[in-house]
Image (cartoon, rainbow, N blue to C red; front, side, top):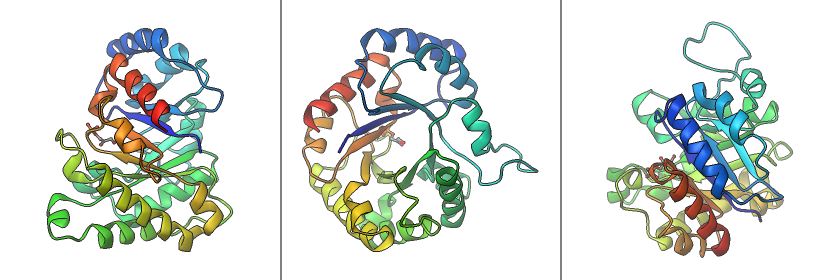
Length: 254
Ligand code: 13P
């Protein structure tokens, strides 16, 4: 299975910084015949990145969110056709920061996911427990529930562009990544839940990314686990050199 390493820039980098990143990244990034890397910038930078990195083979550009309607009275949202016009190929859906700070529900995540897939975008659906849920040993229960509810509209046929990201909230931006063992246990649970939701074939093929304080120095041990198929990267993706080193270390270990 081809791994996938995706940069989630969150609300970082305006045009000038994005341009600077692209100039450095294009010098070091080694293209791949099958896409295995991606960047989700702030949307205002997508055309700029499209122009400077759009020709890089193996690199996908995408969005941090997507709405289920094509257009209408949805202030602050963007639709699948609008993203496709910008050259986006994927959308991150249900990130914990959206769930925690902007009231994103599993039901909304399910609608976003279905719309992205129906429109031909790759949907990277995020799940993960909070610190208190982790401490209360509720990880399995929380992740299973989020997964089932977030994939409510995904059919057994329409899932070739689905990607799952396990991001424990306590590991995001803390410098404290999940151990490879913890990640593997939860990824294994996700894969077995996926079997019931979309069938065995889809589940076996599904890329399950890990996210939370990944860096060039810890990606190899995470990728050594059989059910870790890539990473969703925050802080370490903001410097071209560091994101590229993570991709290279991840590729070598995957
Ligand atoms: P960090 O890599 O900064 O912990 O962020 C992870 C994340 O939230 C990616 O979506």
